[in-house]
Length: 190
Image (cartoon, rainbow, N blue to C red):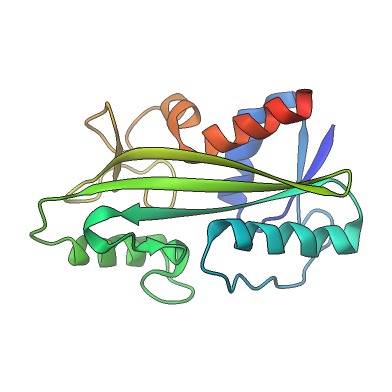
């Protein structure tokens, strides 16, 4: 089965394709020739995921899904949250975002945080939502080369290393995105 993933983020597309295996073919916006920019002006992950999937569906009229995710840090009142990808500034690199987070938490003992992912699925012209969370803490320095985004800083509960240093199979089983994706796949199998 083919599904359109309303993303231009190759890392997310690759991660999702690896998790779904060969049962689904995941197509990105680039692959289907959709090049329109989609603004994410909202204050919630749900609203941002919904605008992406609804915008793409209006053009392609095919089953598709979108994802929005964020890192919520307790000591920072939930920041960076919805602004996760542009925490340091619009267009910031992952390193810039990680460095800003480390600066914001400098000297702070409470390093509890969680990732949250929301998938919005447009299926047979109806909209469905699926959510996943992964709790953990923020490391005091970056570690590891694997993964993307805040993976070099995020230590999931039950582990002592960051996602960027743990085996890929751990992230595929424990991550917020994996949990939300599994809910969506379970729905599609029904």
